[in-house]
Length: 466
Ligand SMILES: Nc1nc2c(ncn2[C@@H]2O[C@H](COP(=O)(O)OP(=O)(O)OP(=O)(O)O)[C@@H](O)[C@H]2O)c(=O)[nH]1
Ligand SMILES: [Mg+2]
Image 1 (cartoon, rainbow, N blue to C red):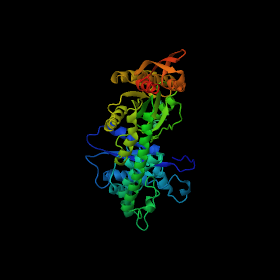
Image 2 (cartoon, rainbow, N blue to C red; image 1 turned 90 degrees about the vertical axis):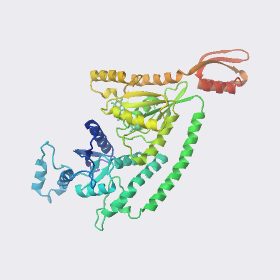
Image 3 (tube, protein in one colour; image 1 turned 90 degrees about the horizontal axis):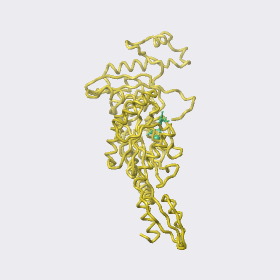
Image 4 (cartoon, rainbow, N blue to C red; image 1 turned 180 degrees about the vertical axis):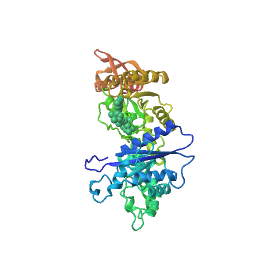
């Protein structure tokens, strides 16, 4: 997101239908998440409209009455905030906009021009078109919002290609709807998300989109092969243990990655700040040397088109010997987030990788008493978890210790003999083992060491002592 101060602020409203069987808590949590997603795209959400229905309205998702209420809220402002409109605008109308308040005390008319209506479900292209026509502003559904965030945040060629495929799949049927909307005097929409859709829909026919998707898939296949080679090389490298930070978006994975490795990775109070897996070494370096990877965040109801790309990125986590499942303890919906994360981990076949639950952001849970209570409750419900704050260096040091303890429990003690003729291997011994004792005689040096069985076997092989 650009941070040009001269850029006009973007305002939005949010709307959702609560279906039977969806609890109030779940419904609210999902709306909160949608508002966060909107914020990540740079919008200020000024109002939320909700309604209970037995099903979505087949024409326009929301019922007629709710659509009218939103239309009134969105359209009556007519650019009132814009000073240049003062002369031409109707002063009585302007006044009216400031006094019209509903029973619940909420303004019935928006004091700001509303750019987008966000809806908390995936809706059909025709529902979106009808809703846009009726409420008089652009409509973005949950899927489009997530696709747009992925699109903005994708950095590596692989991530960009995968997100583009998902966007094309989503946009294709919607371009046809946009074509219906844009008559000869059709509004040119410089919309967010459907970027370029306004002017390019006619030439982007189905076949072109299919060709482009095929081309991108080929590129991805080539990149996948490269990635596999890199992974294989990393695995072949002796004595490397690895952990992967996984968890819901915004839980603090990148912050922990930074704290654990002393590296600069992107941390932002935005959803999906990280889309690619990055790998760094645990710092200070240890025996064995531990690789830490930061991964893409999870979210409930990920758009279908993104599931494949998301999972392939995440599959790298399967190479890890230990998964650090990071959870935002200060989020009231954290249990739902744990569940969403675990479902996906099982789907990609990570159920057998040992897992350590890390409840992060404990500093963000009320006052000291509330924090202590929260910590006690978490420890009671989740055995062997770590409760911490990524902002507290002592906590980070404890996590560092816990990671090392996991890997060091498998270390074994051994004696190695290094003849003077093989001194070039001395560095190897120090790199892969903790040297407990070193003595020398005329033949060479004896080492009493502690290291991983695999690393010791490989050293013995190189020394011809296997
Ligand atoms: N108060 C508090 N804030 C934290 C803590 N850890 C992380 N944060 C903040 O939470 C926000 C998200 O942190 P990130 O590390 O970017 O989260 P992430 O899990 O990598 O998020 P994605 O990349 O979107 O999946 C940032 O604003 C961090 O500064 C913590 O222990 N306490
Ligand atoms: Mg991150």
